[in-house]
Length: 195
Image (cartoon, rainbow, N blue to C red):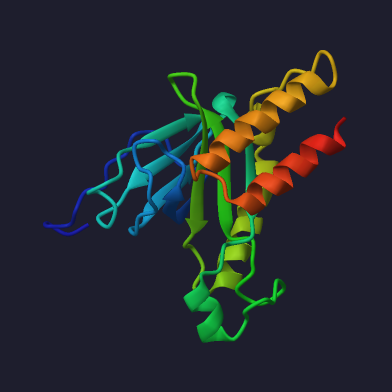
């Protein structure tokens, strides 16, 4: 270590894994997607989303305890019209750009509000590389038993009543622009299959 070397800060709380993501939406205080890298740390007891130089102007440290998480899913990215036209993949759902490189983190915040945080994986140079990193993250969740720390959803008491309420909540999220119509339809179909 040289005389002028920068000393690393150590908190004793070392991430199990760290990924780079970008904010795509979901927080009431931040209604639009933003550019700028955010560090997505997989900790022993929480997801920790930390700003970097590129995101410091809009992002504050966000800690999401695993016991507050309902679900974490990897979804196919929404290809913009410009991307599809430039790549010639318009209307091709199995194209190289149609990869599951988006993370949807469903959790309950400190105020008791359900949040669907949408992030896009940046780690990985290409869309295919980003999707590969999402699969790696899924493996890390399994290996470290993190999904078992998520909130346990109570079984619906009367069968369909709870599902109808969940569909109404999803519709409200769709109407607020938090969910895309496709995401709403997918989740609704999943809930209806449980009836």
